[in-house]
Image 1 (spheres, rainbow, N blue to C red):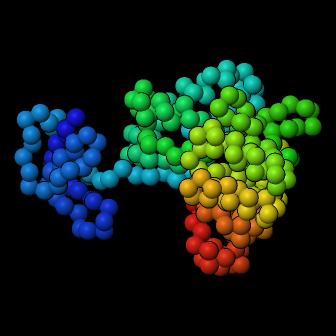
Image 2 (image 1 turned 45 degrees about the vertical axis):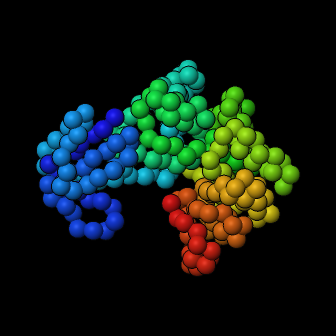
Image 3 (image 1 turned 120 degrees about the horizontal axis):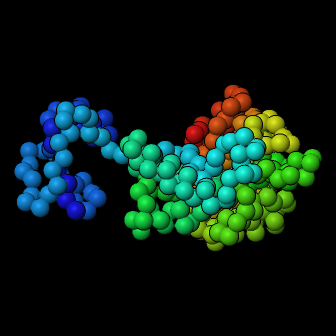
Length: 267
């Protein structure tokens, strides 16, 4: 499919000045020409009507398959609704101009492949499958009543992410990579939605976190992202070689200096 876009102000993302009344040729999903060009005979012509044309945006932390709702609504909603809700979220993501996302937990390989195969509209996806966490940590939905309210329930294609100890962690990383993860997601601190911990709680030892990074390196450099809010958990993750800190709410100066030293990204 060939698209010819005209009558818009182009911001090309390079830092160059905006180009007024730009014309753009898109062939097979790739921008092939920009400038003073004429539309090919078979092109679909899109009039931007004086709007702004810019490259697709990237959202580096999304949860396409996670719904935050009251307990009664969650337990009374069929599990399969998660997939249909994801279709809605993916469509809205595209409508917002976001064409690539990094899913930070919950979406499995089938969600990604449904887009790649053209079954549903959605952004390009980098997925982490399951979120790794400790017993009693941010991904553990256990409650004193015995009811499990996990936001990331296990199902075929999405293994349970709870793991403790170096070798159990190593095996769990291998399981999520086997399931199709493009990036490894871990919680090195607690969070605000888990029933038995706190955002400042430190979770996983530095040695356990290093194993995750090592296993990613074994798979041609798969990166590791860490949900990390408390300062000590952030520092452990950075020292272990984790590539990005997600949230970073309680960053202190020591953590900031460590991140600068290691080249760690803050999302």
